[in-house]
Image 1: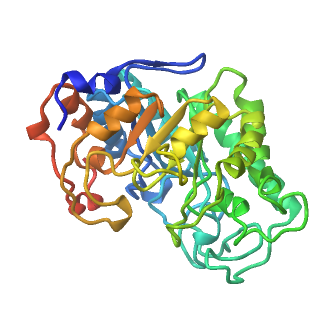
Image 2 (image 1 turned 180 degrees about the horizontal axis):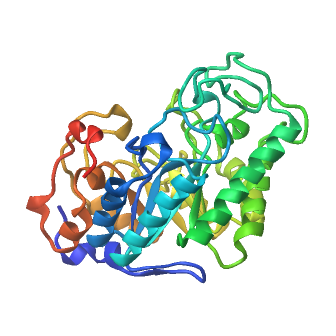
Length: 366
């Protein structure tokens, strides 16, 4: 573990014209499935409040289902529509703010990763741009234009509700092979209308979502967009093979109104492209000029997708990249899931008190 002095870049304040944070730490979104009937209860509120009490700069919630019957694949995944679920989220926001924290909901649709018969709506079929699974197999009919427009409006309504409830930002989940990413990825998007085609044209669905959300929340409300190269079924997948392709991919999203990019990688220290040490967030910042969030196995050995026990590791490489301004914020997942006080302990130089990741924590909410 680094000494206290060298950790200073992690605890510098962050400020844009739309968002001010006390430090550079972000709680990564992590699906917990502890919201019965899609309603976040007092235990969920206390879970997020504890992270705020221990100085997490920005909390991004677990993925929350937009108002569509196939948006999630479990009856304990929180929803972001309906009076009861939104009331639960209002309590979460109030609890986090009372503890001095800031919070953004992650707006989510799982797309074709959903299986027919999944709860909460067993009768609802999974949906995707071309009705293809992540493995490229035909599973259902492609979305119609009318259905796509309805989905865009569902994201926009969720954004409006987020602002009304008092959230400090929203994050749109466009990563990991879920619905928006299925439009991005050539393997799952074979459309020949305006939502398909080359890499730039495949951003159209996301562009319309960002534009619709922007119309609802206004100019001053932060919109974070999460994307990834990798997919849940293919860790080596790439949307962009080169920096030039990444530039082409990102420009329409910037023009649509994205304020911050959350660049999901499994290991934050890995270069995005040959010939450069920059990771995906570093390249995104360089190409767009926008603030970026990096993520990936912070403070732990082993990738999060293995869901196995992991030991604590040095933060030297992380602090070096922050100090060089390769990225602006760093999202912390398993370390914060395991230990609500992780940020505070790091800030106070309590390296010996940091907890290794125990996979049994996946089944707990504390």
